[in-house]
Image 1 (cartoon, rainbow, N blue to C red):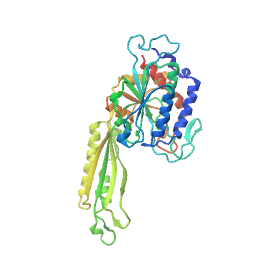
Image 2 (cartoon, one colour; image 1 turned 90 degrees about the horizontal axis):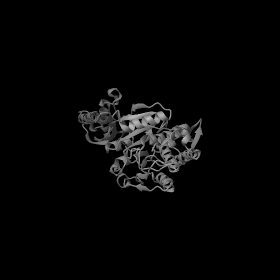
Image 3 (cartoon, helix red, strand yellow; image 1 turned 90 degrees about the vertical axis):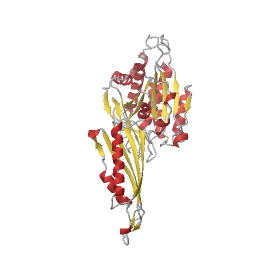
Image 4 (cartoon, helix red, strand yellow; image 1 turned 45 degrees about the vertical axis):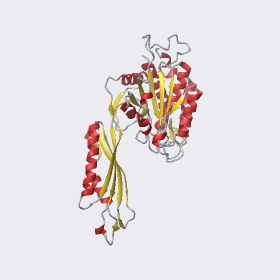
Length: 402
């Protein structure tokens, strides 16, 4: 099947474009921070069921504490109403149509204010000082609009739709998902908040390091010599850690939180820190995490500190690097070119559900979707970017069918 009827912006029905914008605004208004995605999941389910598509929910919530599991739906390849080509053939080869996975996440970071999307200079923003939720509801809306269009004109490939929960919690939902249930030959995630055209070819491994220092409390004015400051131990450890951008941008480390002490006039008995280490090479991420742990123990054992410390290291997700000639990369770059974008291969210091899926053997490419300033007040996405990503997604299917 050529899929030609689905290529290019003019192939999209006007009512589908209207629907895309309407459902995007509606989804953004649904509060769905990580572990509270149920309302958003039910809205997505209802849209798919209305099209006659069965939706399965996995048992992720039993393991993560979310109020919803991941949603999985399948859309069979269909022949366009006017198309003479058989649905069980691919471009006359006699081969069955490919199966393509499209993935987006339902959760957002916590909203700092009610979400009321408004158009400002051609872009959707929150009317209040807070996130918009375009990360990742712009992708959810595009996938729903794509399915509507496929229901109208037929899809040249079989589709699997995966809507995950807990992505903002180190890919919690995708890591808990059983990817062996998928049929997809390859797939795409639309979850990189940069200009359309960027194709993510590598993403880092990530380790979380938690340390809890335990010293000795004492009155800071009367008996300071009897105290052992857990905050001093933590500060000494942090000062000795390799932090920031490392290895020319190939790795990074950060201390994200520090918490301790009870009062100004008490030598603090307890202090806890949470740090992270990332690396494009898995072994390098491990080395940085190990060095952070070493600095923690050295500080706790220093004569001026003499604190006990408990350390926990957890691999949050593994990194990946796509082979230069990987089929989904070629499909993505061809689709972007078909829609007038210049593909650009980039390495990301962040992660997406692609990390968790690739780790389970699913060949998935993450594509930038034009969202701007994600996770920040002032998050926005151009209305044109929504339309463009719908065109790109349709072109992906057409390219995948060849």
